[in-house]
Each structure stands twice: as structure tokens, then as C-alpha cells.
Length: 327
Image: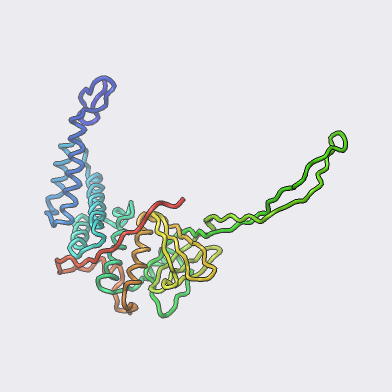
């Protein structure tokens, strides 16, 4: 007789759980998620949240040690970030709630970024700064050097760096040519095992095209260009000279406005990187004018930490692009 993994009582022959216990566990999991999201987005009582989580957990046969409570609080914050994305923008009240929650429970960036959600929070704040306020955050070059080392780009004075992606793959269309042909004419036997074929040989060149990964490196997005710095290739593409985009769930394809243009694709590692890159480009292209950051312009970290007093939703919609994944 098997024992129920939730309550420990007998579950019956070859069974490991009671359906009633499984349902209670599932309801408790959903209740805990709702408690965390409500605390973030609806300004619920944060002081009472830990005890309410433990109470819901006990009803669902769930252990809740101090470490497990911290993990649960972290997961709840990440879920709230994704729910904030449903309207493709981050309002001032949502931002304030997310900051209030993580500061109240002392949650670190490392704890919140296990699945890329603190990075997503930064991305949403940057998009909001561009689309709502028209402010290009001042790029923290010291922090970038600490994270990436020396950047392999030579920027123009008339542009500002916005974001850097690491471990980016570069794919381009490769054309291969081969000569195929065949002989024409009948074969005649002139001796045992010996044949001759009088005739001609006709051939033609056959081309085949395929997308192949030819390099990897860093990709930077500025107010004017996309920069790529790899082991073999280094170039920049002016945003206005890109005639088409092909978004993927893990990359972005472009076609330049040149006579010999061929498809190019950047493979991005982060879960939200492709969505973010296409939205940054579209936001920049929609801006009537772009003021470059100065010495007193806030950095992205400053924008993340600032306290907003306006409770009204001030986030403009940001379109989420992305289709099938690249192989």
C-alpha cells in the first residue's frame, strides 16, 4: 500500500497521493501566488504577508522554512513583474509596488534574477523612460566595464549607448556553389570489361543558400546604431538603414538598405532580450527628437530606485514582438 506524499496516510494500492490532498496542495500554491501578487500590485499589507503565506502553505501540506519563505517571496515578485507586462508597460504604481516589496523583504538582484526577471524589470524601466519621458538614461560605463570588460565599440559623439548584450551569435546568409553535370552518349563494348562512351559532357553551376552562424560577440544598441563586435566581424548598422525586421523568440533578423543586402540575424541568449531589442528600436524610431544624456541625467539604476508620487498609470503601451524560435 502506498502512502500519500502530502498527508502521509495510506493512499491505496500503487498510489502515491489522495486526490483531495493534491487539490488542497494546488489550491494552496495558487493562493500563495495570489497573496504575493496582491501585495505587490494592490498595495496589500506587507507586514502580514509572511504569516499569511505560512498559513496558506500549512493548508496545502507545504513546508515553509525561512529559506523557503524567501524563495517564495522572490518567486512572487517575479510573477508580479510578468503580470505587469500583460499591458506591455510598467506604470508608476506598479514600479512603486515592486520596489516597495523587494525593499521590505531585503530581496537582492541575484535572488530576483534567477530566471531573468530583475533584468526584465530594468528593461521595462528603460522602455518607460524612453517612451513616456523621452529621457535616454546615462549609461554607466564603469558598471559596464566591470561586467563586460572593455567594450569593442567606437561610438560617435552624436549618439548615446543604451544597452549591451553579451554572448550574441551572428548568423548570415551563405551562398555555396558547385558544378554539376552528366555525360551524354551511348557506351560501346570494345573488349571484355572495356567500354567507351563517345559523346559530350554538359554541366551547370548550382547555388544553395543557408543561414549559418559565423561569429559571436557583443551587441550594443545606441540612439542611432546597432553595433556588433565579434571575433571575426565588427560593424555598425544605422537604424534608419534597416528596411525590415524579423523578430524571433531568441533573436532578431534584419535586412539592410543596400544593393547587395542579405539576411543577417543576431541570436540573443536572454529570455526577454529579443522582445526588448525590437521594442527599443521601435521606440527610438517613433521619437520625434532624442536628447542625449548629460552629466546630471539619471542612470538606469537611478530611475529604478526613484520614488514616484503620481499614482496614475503613465506607461504607454509597448508592443511585444516575437515568433518562432531559431534553430
